[in-house]
Structures are given as C-alpha cells and as structure tokens.
View 1 (cartoon, rainbow, N blue to C red):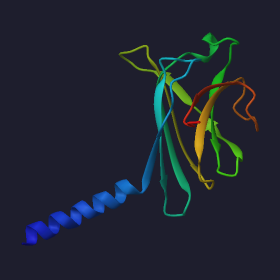
View 2: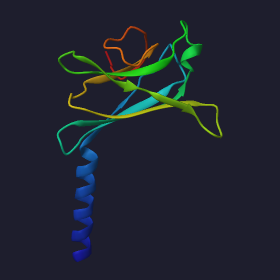
View 3: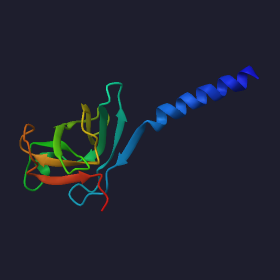
View 4: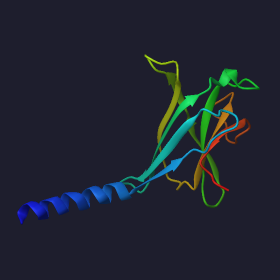
Length: 138
C-alpha cells in the first residue's frame, strides 16, 4: 500500500514538472532545409519564461545568400511585440561537422512563437535579415 502511494506521489510530481513546460518545433525551412530544432519554454519561480532553443543541421551563415555573420533568435508575443532574445551560439561537434545552435535565456515576455534570422549584428532591435526558421504555423 505504501509503495503504491509513493509511486503515485512521484508520478504526480513528475507530471506536474513536465506539464509546466511547452515545446515548440521549428518548421521546415526553404532557406536551410536540413535544419531541425525545437524550443522548450517553462515558467520559472519568478514568473519569467525560461527559453531553451536547440537547432541542428544549420548552414554556416557565411554560406547563405546574401552572406551573414550570425543567427539571432526573436520572440513574438500574442500582442505582436517582437523582441531580440539573443544570438544563437553555434558550433560544430568534435566528431561531426554538423553545425548546431543553442540559446538559453529568460524573458518576462510570454512567447507566442519564435523565429530565427540571419543577421550581421546581434544587437539589433528589429529583424532585417532573412527568416531562417520559425515555430509559427499559419
């Protein structure tokens, strides 16, 4: 009896932890067709949104047309406010030439969807480059 109660308690705690986060997948891209990725969003103890972006099979931004320097991740709220949440940190693996990108950040804004652009600077206020990936479905 105690074992089943403990199991149910652990199961309910795990369910609560898992249900507090949302995962958004990036859609297929015509700009970087091999790229795949997802965004995990969870609310932290301060009522902010912890955002973890992970993308694989990226193209080097210098290989895009036109050439760019880096990738920037943008958050869009339900009210259509667009915020630069940071540069996608990209690197290739030790055993692979596959380019991966990752960003971990916190925002007070609740994301409706996210997108990634290829840019020449990370400190821009509005996207000017090509949209490479998006989680928005029409």
